[in-house]
Image (cartoon, rainbow, N blue to C red; front, side, top):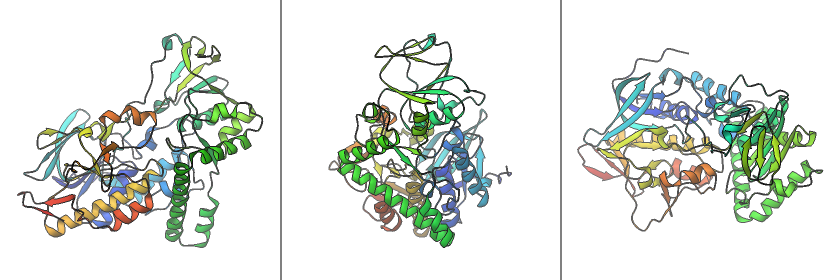
Length: 495
């Protein structure tokens, strides 16, 4: 790990988090705002964010790497649905390749951020191994995502203390856990569960996926033949752009079809499952959710690995409610018993907005639920702050890269015209508040009351459409009547 450059007495931009969002924002700052100083503050000791945190067996991307990868450094791995370790290495290699790693302050946890309109500065309170210090910056980029890294969602099941075996949450997977020859019950049906089940079966476990409600599951080849062909015939930059647009276009087409004709999409998904599991009697029971396709993310299984484990008998499915844990496993609502030596609670994530950082604006506490999100990147009434919020129906990086570009446009506009402050003015009463994420996933609904909102129309509406955002965030004028620029002496003027 290189020695970081000496810290600046004051930064132009502070980036929180050294995951995909933070590395992408840093690259754009170096490329588009080379005269601006910046540093990345990472609370943990490694690059990668989510991809460094999650170490459970089989962890992989839930979208293709030609869109999850950085546009400025196309993914060249063999698999389009990639393993978590390969993604982690790719992010770290990218940071090293562009010298971004020299700007990272590891184990620097930002615990508070206070904005002063008089000075047009954020004052950050930083915890380094229990020692507090202050850092000032002109602009703040929150690239810490919205998951709680301290722990996932873990329901308290009745009888949990009675279970004689080991209970594990995937977010904190013990690396010494040997599942070979063990009976493992995985509670869950989402992306984590469908990843874990075949991976544990491949390690010699007899796995039962205990799902209280099914998910929509789609098999997909792990390798993208079209992208492979493009890279063979074209220069890397062109091939990477075409592969990204191809994948984004197909994903948007599938999403649009599912939202317009949910019953048809559901029938197509079930048809694919039946083709993979021709001998399973209860396909409809195990693979028909209570929600429409894309009310929650589709679960991708590369090369149909989950279905292969179900076919060969190394994995089974039990769809039922959970009555209680017993000393030897799980008692279901029907009275059936799932015997287990290990229970894995793949029961979801918790949202933790702004990485748990306490924000104040001119002394007033920032309450996320009181604000609307402007263009999917800023909070109403909050100056000089950009949030990294990715798509729910496509790869995270697609949106983050557009946001980083837009942020650099704003910074250059401010430097050119002598402004210190940019703030999205709060919307009028004609803008209806709507939930930030149009999603029924548990981690979203559990956090709805503490989350900011979106609005009923642009620029407050979050469009789950990369191509519309590409045109708007990259090329549309900054002067939209909502984003206001000012000098620290409060001499205000619209862009």
